[in-house]
Image (cartoon, rainbow, N blue to C red; front, side):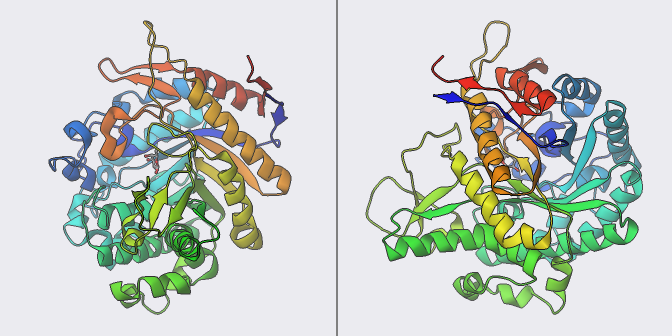
Amino acid sequence: MTRSALSFPAGFLWGAATAAYQIEGAAREGGRGESIWDVFCRVPGAVADAQNGGVACDHYHRTAEDIALMKDLNLAAYRFSISWARCMPDGVTPNPEGIAFYSRLVDQLLDAGITPWVTLYHWDLPQALEDKGGWASRETAERFAAYAALMHEALGDRVRIWTTLNEPWVSAFLGYAAGIHAPGRREPAAALAAVHHLLLGHGLAVRELRRRDPEATLGITLNLTVADPADPDREGDVDAARRVDGQSNRLFLDPIFRGEYPADVLADVAHLGMADVVRPGDLDVISAPVDVLGVNYYHGDAFTTDPEPRPAQPASPLVAADGVRQVPRGLPVTGMGWEVQPEGLRRLLNRLQREYTGPAGIPIYITENGAAFEDVPDAAGFVDDQARLAFFDEHLRALHASLADGVDVRGYFAWSLLDNFEWAFGYHQRFGLVRVDYDTQRRIPKASGLWYSRVAASNALTAMDESA
Ligand code: FCB
């Protein structure tokens, strides 16, 4: 099969993404406070091989080298997150040394001609705030808005694009219900309270940033999925897909774009008391207009409620409690076990445009997409990662098809610039365009990274001859 050459619209933004805890290291330097991930990593069994982000990619000490790398890869934009606990060690009190780190990073990026795209929160809540209830507590939402204001004060003259939260679904459901992410709680009611307080924090931060800086571009990044019934003719499976779509997608999209929680999801979880934490006016705050929607897409899945044993895995905790299981469809999978489903990206984007972003008139950016595979370096440390390269190519072709369908997608960020600390998987799952040798901290662009640099420079996918 031959894949044709495709070019992207002028000005399409090409970048790569990272997150503070996954790459910075320097966990005890510069006055940084502890975050929930520092604490969670010390819980026996929480992270593979008791690994942690204490050193990670040592990016804190290697920003100049890493920015040079971005430049070599022709990246026009770099999406990174700020460690709240570096800038406010107790979640409240500013730490000038931590703030200065990000200020220098932004200056260096701009000197290199790279647009800084800031994510304020990528899962590393200051532990001091978790000690007071974390995202299950309303106070955290207010603290988050104060933190957003502080960072804008420091960086707003140079940073023009701000994402409030990365993937609140993960923070809430994996952190507070499944307990497989920090803070490791297994309290479904707290997870739903966390959903609301994360969204409220987003809304309060948008209000704060908008007031200070009407010209800034503001958004949120959601991890969205396509949930299919394993058997479209089986009523239970159709309902399973509805539940997953409800909790993964609509529970976040509806309040942001429509100012209301989806009634069917509220009914599904009525016994968990979510309605009790929602106060009058909250949904107005949450639905304050954003300028962009960030979409992280990794995979879609098929779901069933059929209890018969067949290869199936529990779905995310709240729907699993309702008997929903995920059924593998025989598609190729990545190192994470995630099904490779590029056509899902096109369906997702088209649906978002139709139901949410189109009516609101706002563009979409893919803020993360990528894959882990078992990388085998040669003697020189080079990784010829054809599977990852093909993953990017296929997803970019799906994105391109969406553009042709009329969806307003303005840019794409590969996850990730570097191999890094992949949360509960530690360093065992590698997503980088660039290999990191964790013993020496040497960075070596992979075949996918070199390929991506050509895509970014030419704003096009070249023809690929798969028979070769
Ligand atoms: C996303 C996260 C990112 C990384 C990728 C693989 O959910 O935002 O930090 O872990 O998955």
